[in-house]
Image (cartoon, rainbow, N blue to C red; front, side):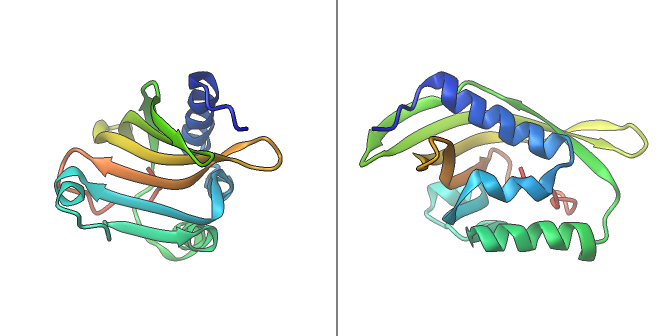
Length: 157
């Protein structure tokens, strides 16, 4: 039986944020199951049941493709993120899957040093424990508070 403690869920979120913030995005897909769901959407669209989102991926392979595009194909001004992630709140566990909600704030730091709030919102996750005992995301919905997205939404949130 999987143990979904706040400490383990918090460690998963901390490792996830560290991976992105340290520009180690090649490791980012490993936080997800092979068949998974990763969506960035607005709170307004999410509440209305619009599930496609600004970014939509439903396999780990799609996440790897996103990283490849980020590194090789996309042209954008260099920047980085710093995630501030709140405490995960367990909504429940059913059939070995934890439903978890975690608030986040992401600031973006541009090449010239300019820093601004880039995104705020909540992660709405379905977390599972693998055979190796590690937690991973079966689903991560990134639900952003604002309906406005900057065109530099290239790095995963």
